[in-house]
Length: 252
Image (cartoon, rainbow, N blue to C red; front, side, top):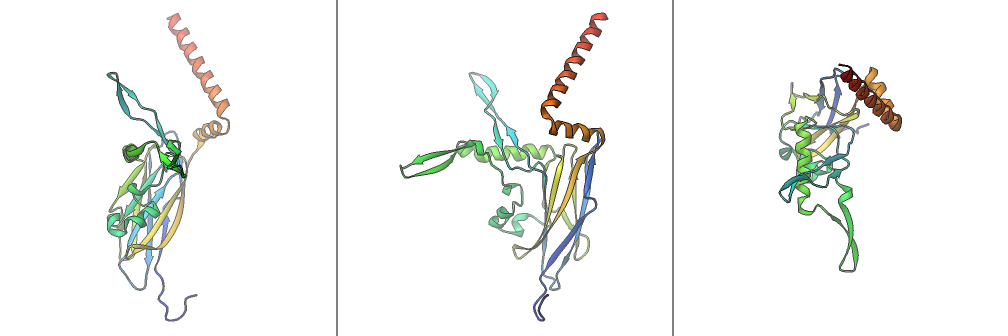
């Protein structure tokens, strides 16, 4: 309960038009609308930032290197902790809403996503005094990280929209979440942040479930619960199909 004379703190509220997306064999993506409202008796200038994160997925990436006149793939780098889907939408550019330390702490924006390549870390003893963690990627690490973001952006899995949150009335806003065909299966989290004077003053979390249904779901669960059996069955089917095709061509 707020004491008399104490200003009511600002608050934000939001909801999704749907909390479940069903993926079938004919799935072509989905569009979900997030709508919300700002409650602030003081009517102070406000910004809204919406951050949507999908389930984490390891990302394996390599680049072309030239050896003896031949272009081959380098040793792959595996990034961990990266969301399989990420969207940042805001009422204006994030850099105009808050400072870099605040955005980094929230993981707000493609430049501030927190993921790493732990396999590239090693411990070295320097100056004979203490151990330090060194990244084998060295000065190339930012370029590898940018490559991950570019790859995901081309696939429609990462997006940042400086004007993706739109006020439809003085205190009412909306944003669209566009899931591509390759949207990962799992639980998504939508974080709605209310900013005033460069800092978040209120937030809400909403969740979205993307799941396979029908035969797609049965195969998905079978593959994840019984991976070895699924692999053997898949190989057996492929061998049988190859044998049948070979026999058919021989007869013809």
